[in-house]
Amino acid sequence: MSKKLDTHNIPGTYLFDKERSRNGYYLNMACMSLNEERNREAFRADEAKYLDNYPMSKEQRQAVLARDWIGMLRLGGNVYYTFKIAIYDRISMQAMGGAMCGMTEDEFRNVMLTGGKDQLGNPRGRTNVLEKNDG
Image (cartoon, rainbow, N blue to C red):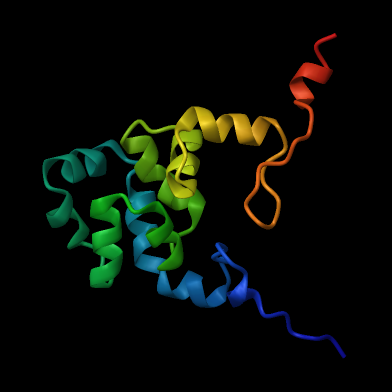
């Protein structure tokens, strides 16, 4: 018999499971719609009005408008879909990751290049893999 894991109590983690997928459906569809130029133009003209096309919760709408990346994930957004908004804003994945971690883009990039963070949120001290292969 398999034991069910408690995946909803991992600090700082918002597992994109069936429940979050259902809750975030319209949020994610709004994000994906930005793949089309005509939708980006409509979003650019009036973001709040554009979001009226998707029956999201008030909290989801506010998270999108505020570019609250963690809020979007917590409310059912999938990082691959919410990144469409970052792309629309011309924000890199490293800048988005940094914003979610309270770091600058460069700080986040450096942490990722040196091994990420441990479970307590402390940067790992691993030697930069890119530097190892340079020589």
